[in-house]
Image (cartoon, rainbow, N blue to C red; front, top):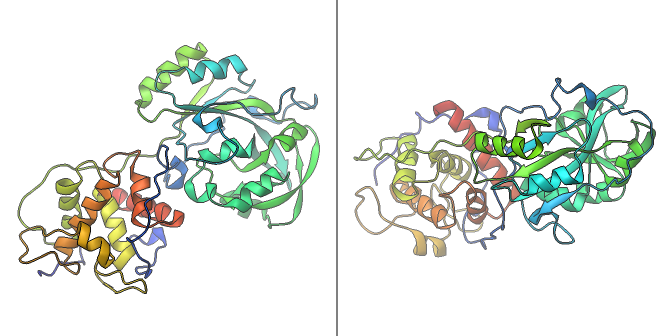
Length: 396
């Protein structure tokens, strides 16, 4: 086995990851979420405001009483069923300070390529003397539109369904909020609600989230925004379709995160560093997958070969395969002699690329599901994608 150089592959400190977690990477049941990728905010490096300053009407509405219909409107798969069943990626937000009509939302549901549409209430209100943006949602519908880690956190959704409120992490620190404490929210009327905790919602600019009952009591603007999921449509085309459907009304804000870089070119020869190995393995064994995903997994699992185990579950090698999984997926690559060696990075990294590709990592929609198959944990998906974004920013 040849020795790879690690010193040319920096470990971005901003990701806040430990080099070694000692958890099994394989040997878990692959749970395929019948949905689009994780919401953009899960790893979004450059948030764009949902409430642009150019839309002044998003101030607190006049105290004219609650809206006639406080229930947000949903079309498509996200609105079906009694509870959370899938993750939906919001690609585009349509914001209208006067509120979108039911007819408008119906038109958005018919836009070419739109799979799901969810309308939410919202306005700027005051909490503890500060101006914040709040949206009102049906938690059974909105849950599907949040990042996997948030959708999986039952306490947050119980808090909203029980008449409380939750916040984004930044708003929690800015407002000095404490879970279980009651706070007064001032909109068209003043409402006292219990704070249920913080989370990432995947939509930049949203500070607080309340349920439909609190939305009505606060007098939030009904259907002030609609989220559209259209993963197969290019953003310029999607915006054109939406403008045509609404006659040019509404402000459009892209919610998509930057795509991870994909390099399908192979350079031949044997990689000399882990960085080269990740790039070449992705190009050869999973051409549609970004090499940054392999780099993130390699760093999280073993610190790029610094700790090859075995883990407490028996996983071994730089990419942490269980023996049973290695027997099925391990291959010999890059001219290495002998049978597949789980400790050899020249075998282990290509084998990981092959496994991820079989689980769907070759497409943008299938990538989060493939990472979840690699290690069945919501935090793992979020951290791999976050670190992959770090590598993308460093190396492009």
